[in-house]
Image 1 (cartoon, rainbow, N blue to C red):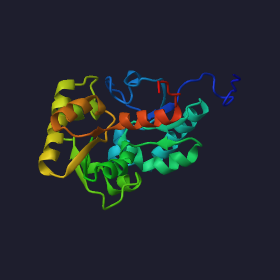
Image 2 (tube, helix red, strand yellow; image 1 turned 180 degrees about the vertical axis):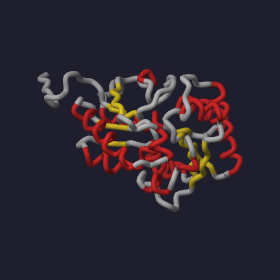
Image 3 (cartoon, rainbow, N blue to C red; image 1 turned 30 degrees about the vertical axis):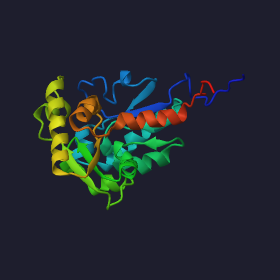
Image 4 (cartoon, rainbow, N blue to C red; image 1 turned 120 degrees about the vertical axis):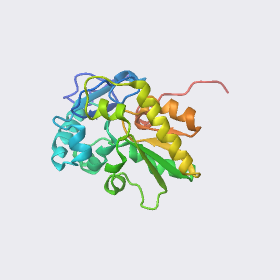
Length: 243
């Protein structure tokens, strides 16, 4: 077999997924998008310099586009085969970042919503870091049709979550956040008899996907289901077995 270098700027190999993370500092526990041990394969990170969660979620600052593009282009130059984000609110810049590189880009977990609705035929519950700041623009830029049946829940009332993520002191109360996201999920299920699945929009919530599923019995999607799916398309392996 003859191997060939993919690009001159690539000084190592084997990372399919590049992840753009925000310029924040708090505990990234296993299961979090920003914790490399979450994955069964190597990933590569790049920071969008100066892009913190307040500027992205609360301010929707258009000036963040430039550091996002710089991070994406850096990851592409380093040899990753696809680029994702680490906050569902990055949906605002999906099209622009995708246009800035030549590899697949999937910035927001919200991109899964059309797929989820199609396979369930039911309402999709979306649990967000802050539902009051999740706008129609985020949905539209994720390819979600306006007539898609949705239900929204948010973590903005969970003090443990907001303290850890938005006003960090370097600590994270794992049990309190788990209890909070379960409560939000169960309320969504109680309010909507036609709920068919739950999507955890926030990159900090996948550590609790198992607990949400145990509490609701529903399919649970998040950033990790999306990242694993794309990775599989980029790292296909031959099948072995018997006939």
